[in-house]
Amino acid sequence: MKNDNGEGVLWADALSYAEGFELAGHSDWRLPNAKELQSILDYTRSPSTSNSAAIDALFNSTEITNEFGQADYPYYWSSTAHATWVEDHDGAWGVYVAFGRALGYDQMSPNPTWRDVHGAGSQRSDPKVGDPGEFPTGHGPQGDAVRIYNYVRLVRGGETTTALNDLSFKEYNFNVYPNPAQSEITVSAEVELTTVSIYNLSAQKVMTQYPNQKEATINIGHLANGMYFVKAIAKDESIVMQKIIVER
Image (cartoon, rainbow, N blue to C red):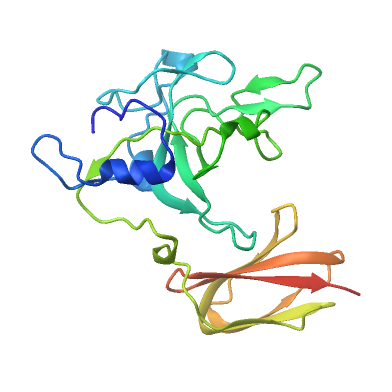
């Protein structure tokens, strides 16, 4: 679509907007995935350099007023759900692309304020439902602005998945042992694992291995005591997570 929908909506309402939408004699419009949105970015343009959205000049973008009171351009929802290592929260946040400033609330400054911490064209995520008023100073370590009501620009044709169960979070037998562990763990699965990563409770990736087999032994002797998350990605791109405890 050359134009967006003109208003911020919840993620589910963005999907509903696409249902049955007709334009220019076509009815196969849908919410784009994150990569499709990225394809129309133009990083030579931005609110601060060209007084425009960071978007190909072919497209129009509704002007908004951001959290800092500046003239700006929206975040656009994608159909892509955000994966997380937090139990029961996979898919609760949806991916968006910022075609205007990607603000964060700088609480470390002597004079805390909103800043363009990520830059136009950034990809981040928002809760699919909720009240933006619950995030007066943003979310996360960089105070990312949380809007929840984001804009929509549909794309035609092709197929994209929107349900969490269709987003490559497939079930397969996956084991990590021993747990608790001391110096090493063994990761095993019924399918070939391409990547095994370990995250700490601050969501920082602390190590990654690429076993390309169904079982791998990983040295964790350098990790401090505590809880971690093991994330395994299989050859078919399905993903599983498991908690482990390092205890000596």
